[in-house]
Image (cartoon, rainbow, N blue to C red):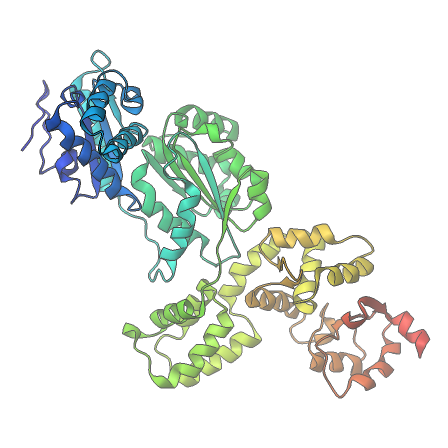
Length: 543
């Protein structure tokens, strides 16, 4: 037992705070380094062991997300960092002693430099009472011990590999700078889940923490000041914090956080004003702080100056199968008779975690026939919950952007960008390139960098087509766009009007359809084979 007694009789024991003891670093999750006046006598041969222990501690924590709290007791961290004064004298003696093993000496020097750059505690006589100094250390350690990890996911399939791709972007070894990292992707792809896992993984490295969940929804419901009040309360530990205006909130955040090492997660951001109100600039936060932003809008990140971004990709087939089985079958036991419907469900979800969870939950404990019936329904009319989560991005578009999105999802999947631009430019009477790029920024569509083809997730396609179907669920001719030949034939035969995609139109009726065209003065036909939009009046003159 080691006790540190003060006038307040405050004591610290190895049993109560085990990681205060440097000797415990091998078995504890956190390590504590104590630099004292006695520790400055590093020139003594008997004190080579602490230097070796220091190097071992730093080696031990690499890649393990462990926390090191150095305590500089009557020692200037800069002297440790640059090996000045007694540290320099000690190193000079060691250079002579270990001239045949300079690699060991370099490792010690590197260790001293590295630990001096860590966020820790510096005690200097006259600055404060010892018992207050120790009390501050205990408060921080107690806070970290009591911290409860945020719930991430019932089945974190594929999550570890995704976390490992984002951690390097955070540059956790950089303690003198503030970094912002953006996580983007379509709705339901797992951005929030990934942010939660990262939060739990690195939280111990920060003095203060805040996970602002659902910023889009909460901002719309309660306003930006509500978010600012939550942040201030979480970081300052004061439930009575109330700011009356956004301007007052930003001022409070800048003043109170600029010296704090903060981990801040801004989840589901959809408006730049939200970032301006909560994390306007890097210098609002203390050195070593990290801000992680999840959003569907890449342009929003670029506008805010976020340079490091990570796109959340869909699950692969093996991960999709694993997640679906965990959600749909008790104890993960699957009978061979389910192989066909499982593959069909995996194909339908196309690696979308939220869709896999919805399908698995809805079909938990169901027979194969129930799976077949439900999947047939999903393929015809998308599940309402999946549609709702995806449609948020569509609803955020301007009216003309919504039209272009529906044109592309209903008619032009897999087409080259130049072809789509030519067709839409002719139809809308202007350049549509900017509006198409907006769909890319919103994570709704992608443009292949090699072939310049426009692609998008299968569920995004289903979402767009369902929006059109809902325009007139029963009367096909009242829908704004058509893409399957049965509907097109029905419209032509019943003298209805719509917008038609002939690229996927493979039917024995094709030659017969043109005799009906003269009755449709407003009919717009897309024939991508000719790379143009043909209006009825042009066709009518050719017959």
